[in-house]
Image 1 (cartoon, rainbow, N blue to C red):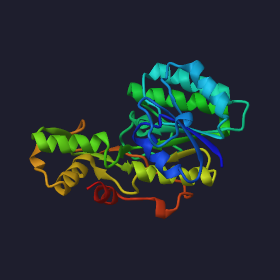
Image 2: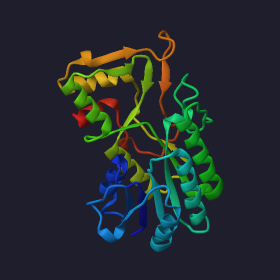
Image 3: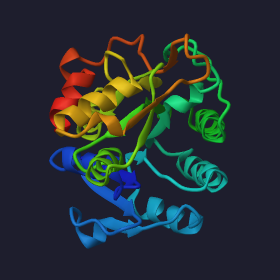
Length: 271
């Protein structure tokens, strides 16, 4: 069994990965809140500021695979991932780094594929681009960039926010002219397992194979929850007569259709 270290294993994505990978890999995880799904000796409390502790964990485990789904201060994350890459530079370990649609938030004119040059305006997007470039420079083909859209799950912050808003009759602001795609935590875990097992390389865009305006997606979720859609407050992103795209699409053909989903699939699963 290959040893897999999941950085950020107590988050939404990390928990889904632990569940999907438990019968296939020798799993280790770092957490901010403890992990009931791993034995004590295979879980480590770790903050992004704790570089020396990170190195100790890497040297102790000697992981074949490291998956990063960390969150935190951007500058500290950049330093953390640089030290991670340098620690793994002269090993055979592979790194799977979760990036984001935001690396393209400087161009909303169209959906973006893996071959498009990232262009970001937000601090978050710029940080993710910097981290991608740094990891690529140090690890070359041993780092895979997994770019993902908004992640949903049955106990995700996004869905919980909708439930709370319905319960308390609280307004949710949505864009009527911003086209997005989405992804389930459990679907992402299955896709990443396939990517790892088949040793797919390079940049990989994940997300629903169709797209939907943000407002329309929220409408359908609220309808399924039997909530009042009047809590939605529609607004236009920039020019109301223009359609904007905050969407990842893929020009790769190495992920099977059986592992892809639509927005309807996501909504049906959530509710």
